[in-house]
Amino acid sequence: IIAKCTPSDMEHILIEIYHRLGFESGFIQKLLHENKISWGTYRDGLGTHCNAHANNYVIVPFAQFTEYNYCLAPLDFDMAFYENEYIANMQTIDTEMKTKTAYTEYTWQEVMVMECNGNRGSLSGDPDISTGVHWSDDCLLQSEDEETRNKLNVLNWALRDTLIASFDQAYGTATDAKKLKQMF
Image 1: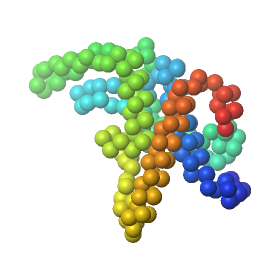
Image 2: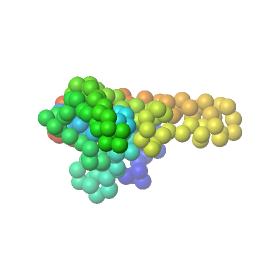
Image 3: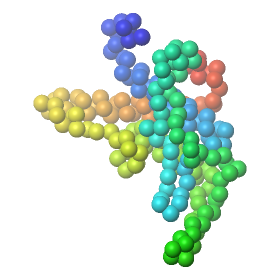
Image 4: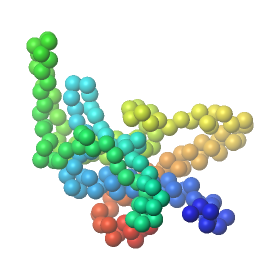
């Protein structure tokens, strides 16, 4: 596809890629939430867990992309659950210590908001989200001159903003497959 791009197209391709990836990740998140599915956000004795993050998307093979006009697929549904399966109050029992710990869970709506924000934070490079995927600004520091570093820094943040803005656009759109196809 890139080989068929004109020089003018090439100037915009990176922005289009970030927009597309952000939009599709937002659309996937919205599709799950509209169907009352949590990707796997809950709290237990180890802390709060959320499977909605950047390394739980995979780019589909080119043949699927050309046939179905989407480029992302979600992964890691081992901890996913429906709203009607959600347990609002959990209790863990430590048999060695013979103690019980009760956890007051979040409401379903709070889980949905937390999951969406966790996904957004991961995609935008939040260093406090533990997913195994972190943005690195090291490449910016390796540039030889300050002007180049500044330009790369602006590009870096502009691309992140594009990704999140398109995520938000998709998350705020009804999950109508026909509407999605029309957008691309």
